[in-house]
Image (cartoon, rainbow, N blue to C red; front, top):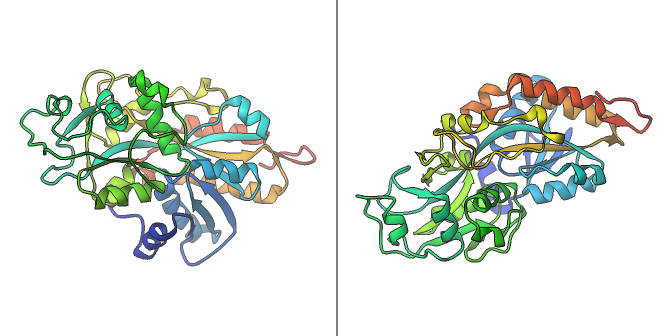
Length: 348
């Protein structure tokens, strides 16, 4: 797979973890968005291709879902991005609408000498016990029982989590809440009171921290696993099958998504049934105001996302994201007619 970030962009992310201007040739502020780091790699690819074709650039701040929600509510950006869908009542109070753009997988990653990608398997229960601070060594019997024949070290586990408000964290903790009653006390949200561990900012920060910490475990969106050559684990899904994070297991989980009957597209894809399903799968969402102060900007944003739906599938698949099916993008674009200017005229 071709890496999606050039060296200068990687340095910017590592240094700041914030605003990244995703244009093909230079700086532009034609469109502005902020939020989730989960979809940053594909938004970067789409923006580069769209810039080359249309001349319109995109300024996307990869600051985490929590920041994206705050910025769109404050109207400081044209759109927000979040991996945690907002519930219909919260959307109504904030005057927002949301729609899914792409789906992908959140992946546990480790830094263990001599261990290859996919060589060790974990369960959701064991993963929760690690993040609760109850399993503290890599050769704990709960882990060794799942991995007969694998030489697991007598080494402390260094737990890494997100330090910022994160939709990736929401997907991860939502999964842990479904498989571990005890994790229910911690909860599922973009930010939680972590029982143990070190915090990294963004998927970028977690990937970097895991990569430089011997004995570490963390969780990142799959594209960051590939870019940073991290060692991913397999996970035992709800069918009792150990599965690897890859396109086919993300597709298997996404196949259960019933978007047509999801109110305001509120839908969670964690712990889906099926022998091939990756258990920590999720969608990432775009947030827009239903009444637009700048209808021309809103129209331009929707044109960009229309282009992504119609032309961006191959780019998404190249990074192991799952494009939204045509049936879903058609549902979404029909809902865009509900986005209006101050006079009540649809902007789309």
